Length: 347
Image (tube, rainbow, N blue to C red; front, side, top):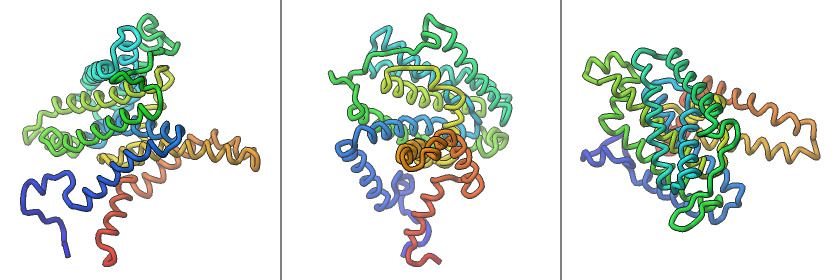
């Protein structure tokens, strides 16, 4: 019987999936993703696309907050930059999705680096206030630069096309959203096996100690902001191409708080946690809405209260996770795996 972790080669030790059961579990998950759209209704495909895009944004925020320890309240702003950049490139310059999305990501990364400059001097609450300022500034620019963004009016872009196919259905866009989510997760997993990722973690654990051992703290903090913003821009650009109608109301401070809740509930500093948190925070309001519809005839008073208490349920979920399981759903998943790994000899 195995006891502990034991490898005989560096290749095995550095593998993303170190054991056969891990590879089998990954293959099952990929098979499920491939089969799912052929069996699911349009409603569930819509939810799946939302989860995929939310997972991308959550991974980007987790790189900055969970792995590098830099608090950010500007995720909604960075997604807005990506969404409006993609929308403007598509609507006014006619760029296809495979061009407007990368360009939007690069612009968002540049904006993220600019607002990451205060991270050299600011930490904790003060850095959070600086990123909150970024949220306010971006919102103001979007709503007041009417000639570029349309101001408070929605920006409408044409339905994206790829290989001659219009991506104007949930089924077709599903493959783009899920593929991008998987590639983002793969990139993040490999990032933290590299020198750059280890530098991020060292800064999170103790930035002074990291600087003593030779880590260029300011450079890596800016790089963390750039990578996180790039991925947030990817999520925003995909959301713009998916909805084709872009409004600043989708990217307010509530969006930033939403994604903070996603990574807190899912688990800070984990790739799995980004997916779990995105799925939980996307499916929970859908469950509440469905429950409200089901209670319309039997208990209309309760059904009318459910939408109003949705935010309270979100807040309660965050508090319960912080108190009962601070490491989030990712830790619960690890507990389940560990239980079956040693079952039936749980002692």
